[in-house]
Image (cartoon, rainbow, N blue to C red; front, side):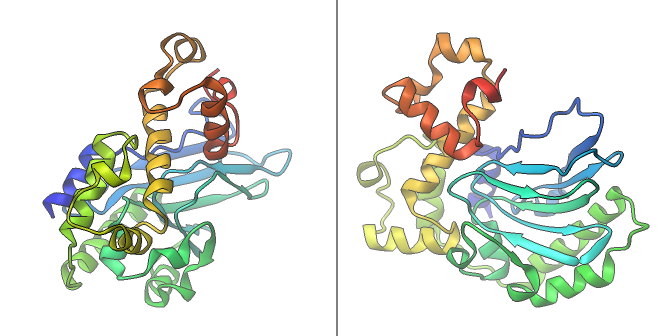
Length: 270
């Protein structure tokens, strides 16, 4: 469990695309119970505070995580979203209330023994991946429940799963994962990830536990490192934070950032 603990300590996957000042849309996160904080980064809710004048496109930036989410008004509509190598936009209409669970990298397959490569770059109906968990959401989540009540219910369910499932930890993989976090995603894969796994084994375990290659995941970690630094447009220009994590010029950085965020750094940090 200590190795999963160090993932939480070294990695903060954030979703910054909804403004906290928005008076029409609310986005909030709730921390998990301590018993499962090494599996779950947060529970979240995205909802309209009043009907919007036009349909809303929700932009999800690349964060290296897997999310289970559902429509609070219609919990039978529940999904799982795998690792994404680029930003994704969901057209979600003029009124919505979505609730989700953001699993820390590698936590989802440890809990559910699912090959995450089969989930990558898409959202799928949860009943096709975890039919029992999907049915549980259908049964237990009520429209009358507040977000706090639902978070309490989800906490209890995942604590139960973590205790009832026999979890196997591949410490060579987890050591490699933590090296990536400690280097903010900027490292020489062949030289720096010498954890006892061959290149072929490394590729196999990253596909299973993360859903992508070591390089693709490292690029997302590097992007999230820049988001967590919360640079302003001006400080990014002056301090050139992107040089510290291996970008050789501004054009390369902007292109990479836009792939993961959907807009340029200037638009994101204005």
